[in-house]
Image (tube, rainbow over all chains, first blue to last red):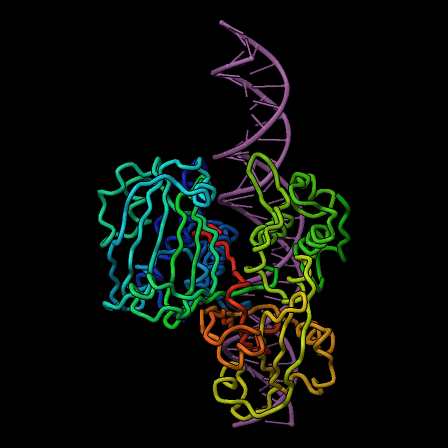
Length: 251
Length: 251
DNA sequence: ATGGTATATTGGTCTATACCATTGAAGCCC
DNA sequence: GGGCTTCAATGGTATAGACCAATATACCAT
């Protein structure tokens, strides 16, 4: 396997070593340099070649393991996980990226994007004062030209001045947040429930009113723990499945 | 806070120290000895009073943190998390327990429990040969006397001889598995999707046919990684919401 | 060939120690 | 009182080393 370039020594650094290592490995997995089923070098060996302590390497491996990217087996070795389509449910990442990874063609149409005073429920979620301005947007998302998901999002306007100027038909919401405003979504709390399609949703998604939809509500936080997005997305029930891996304690 | 009793010293033990510590703390949280918002002793102090190394204690704390039971803040301390109702989505535990914790009255009615040859899809999931015998059961679950969820489960019969004899109207499936057969569910892979209620489901759940339901499919594994349960549970869409907490890498 | 047995390899746990980064409160100055 | 600095306390990161537990392999006896 290829080498991973690490910054600095071991003290006074901006980014922790184990994060750098995890990201380096992640990159190799995503680029295909490390293919599913590949075995990583033994921990002792890899830690030495990286010039870090084994415990530090293990912290990186554990992070990737909990993300479902690696599988570790005592006595055997550490392997790159099979690319389960469903893996993504436990990770936080944009619709577009997930679709592309599966070899489909994503698309988006902005239906609405306007600034308006926050309703009570939204202000509450975003922890802004009621009637503080928020950006309210709606995007219809496509896969292979077929409408699949309707996204409604709310952003605190004071965090994203001039948000209208960006083209959300080509760019990911989170990508714009990060590139243009420096906000990185690092945590999110989300819920799933089964609902019926309203007339409005049915028309946009080209399904029958009353058809089952998956409603995903998400409150996303930036690196400082401040809420920066509240979203209510509905997915076609017949086309999406949300998968999670559960463990009983012991990490 | 109360003391935690640990088994043995540091070598040749059955259960790792950090698991024992995590379970001890978990017990104190669940019993109320540690209330939400309480601050735990500093790591250095607590590790000393437990007679373990700080790193070992930290491993226990991390496990509880990822379960959403603790919140750690650098420079401030480690706190017992507020009991978010939704927390349970990321944890693996039985329906009954979750309901009781919210102060509701659970109930169950066994509709079917029989042994039969496995269909292909089920055999596939349970990794048994096709037409190997499996137990197939259906339970209707109640909350406050109202039907809320319909559970269909499949168990490999060779793992659970004589399974019919146990009363599943009072006992949890997992509890019977563990107590009577020694199988502990330690991992599970589950998926959620939105579906429409069939006539059959609608009648049992006393809702309209076509109403939205949440279909949860679950494949549960024992401590050795062998699949021991495949389940297809449907929840009333208007009464259940499934919540998860997501993090972007860095654990 | 088959099956068991030693041995080496590999990840898992635990200790001990050091220093960094963030927080919050105490103290200080004005 | 208000704002600032200082500093101790606390969790976070990293190192080094030891031994345990599970697995895979090689080898041997049958």
